[in-house]
Image 1 (cartoon, rainbow, N blue to C red):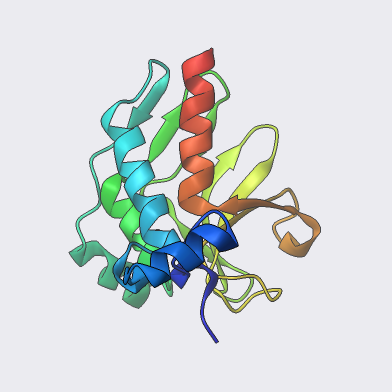
Image 2 (cartoon, one colour):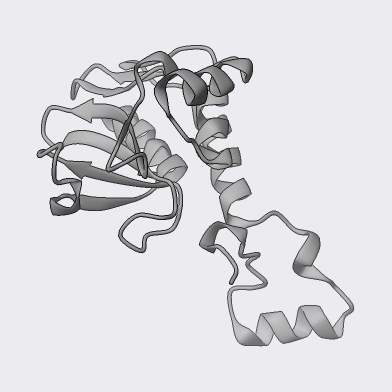
Length: 170
């Protein structure tokens, strides 16, 4: 079964897709949804608005140490987000995305708590084996012992891009 972030959008409409295929265009080599989300995040981080502070990306060597020392199992895409920015702070909301050193496992390691929002509570990313959610989905919850009582916010990278864009409006 194909993971949601591995999908390659072919076209906006069926007619457009058929036209592309008829012209010999093979869309399978185009960027997948997950890669597109990471590219959007990289662009957003390159032009941060006032009120959003991002730390330089985490050293990839730190990921192994986080797994070995703290039992933290991150997906590739979550690691890529942290490689782009090892922590983000939104001053107007007090929302914080933690640096790798503060990220902790939850739900028997199936979630990685990556931040906190004063209004939403804990922010955690799925690993792909929790509550039948795809990997790299950001959820918010207030009860650490019962994250299933929280709410799904969306693909991690896309939610961060949305929050960065919203900070530009304030």
